[in-house]
Image (cartoon, rainbow, N blue to C red; front, side, top):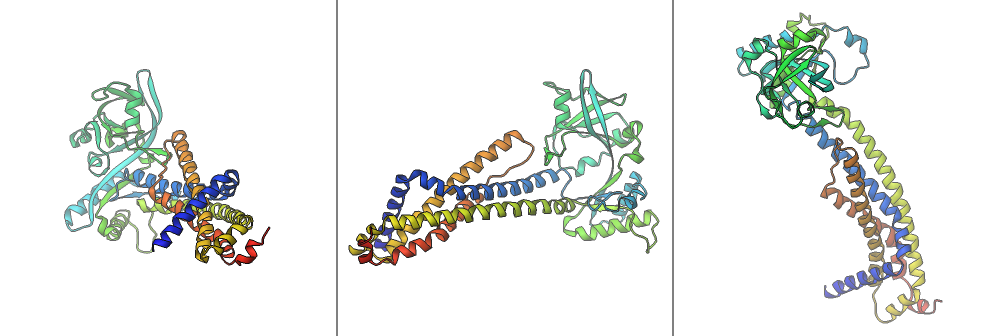
Length: 416
């Protein structure tokens, strides 16, 4: 065991001495490995970032909430069929809640109506455009996954009396009330003044495409004074027992079909959407990134492995007499094999470390330029990069190292 340890340490010393003596050649040889590691690391960073962004963004939907809507969140190929469906009526929420009250063992917990519209929000000289205005009931505060930064959610009394009160998103509050608390202040939406009673904590955006912080929530009746509820993408949000999700969907489907008077032979004229739909739609994107990244990685590592194999063969030829001398002095075949194999692996590992450093730098730059797009650079990716580097070194260095270990010492000593 002591001999093996000594041989390994000596092989590392020889390998790093050779790399130091041929810095440019070693760097150019490792270039393919560097490109491959950068590709595989950035691919992993992007996929992990998408997963993290999706989980963070979907938390705003509520993990245990399904959405009864007119339109599906996927498969809009049959657009005319979906367009001709009857609108969802926000009043459908009450019969669902009545069902829940009559069936305490039901997997359904709470139904909340909601309507959405885009509008500008103003306060004096300040103005923000393309803000999502949400009209709902006080129960919405019970199912959303958002804390309050300041103030409170509007009450059931305020909802029933259709008071002009609102809860504003973090970005809306920051834009309209710089350096001052919005609580108790008024904002203007479509010539109506609304009193701010709460500010939602920052939630972030959905992969940079939709911001949960750019919305204003108000009582549904107050919403109806300024916006046509029927055309405001009405929906019913239903909180369910996640452990009985399929049963919950079946119950919602049965209740909705009865309310809408659908006979057994007719298809549903509504959709029951959930977070899983969004995840499924992002799977092809992640697969595309993975396929592209693996292709580039494989090509770069193959070229790099060929280069390292070629240089290792050259190194064996250049040091043939040295190999003969070492064998004549008693060096075993495994010692020679280990020496050149470690040299090839060392070049790959140094290239892998360079690739990881480059990938980390590129990820940091992207994070600065596109802060809304999540990137996750994990220890798992570092270990993957180093593992791929070691495998590439073993794959590319074994053949020339094996050839070196088989040299006849007499022939090697006569080599010029």
